[in-house]
Length: 105
Image (cartoon, rainbow, N blue to C red; front, side):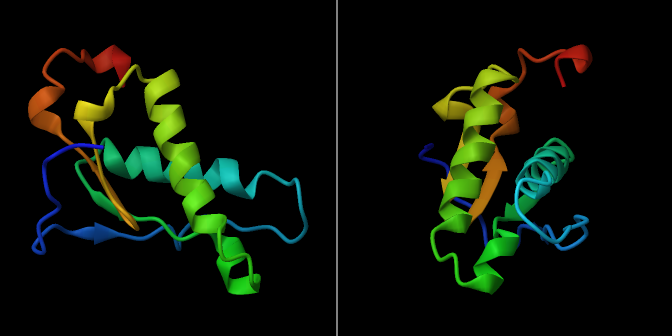
């Protein structure tokens, strides 16, 4: 997405604290996306690993990353210059987010 790199000293946040419910179509991915975006706007670097990977869905984390980026673009009006993706890590380029107001977040 962006030319800015994720530094090794960045604090990495995991999505482990998300309440994962058994079964399909119960909102697990939505809760993971919500948590990731919340962490991103707290200036955290997020390790994106979907809960379904533990059950053999090898492309689930890529799909989760795509959903996070899509939501950042559609809901929060961020462009590629604001989003730094080095799969499986993602963070925001806050230097380019000066246009945001508190109510935008």
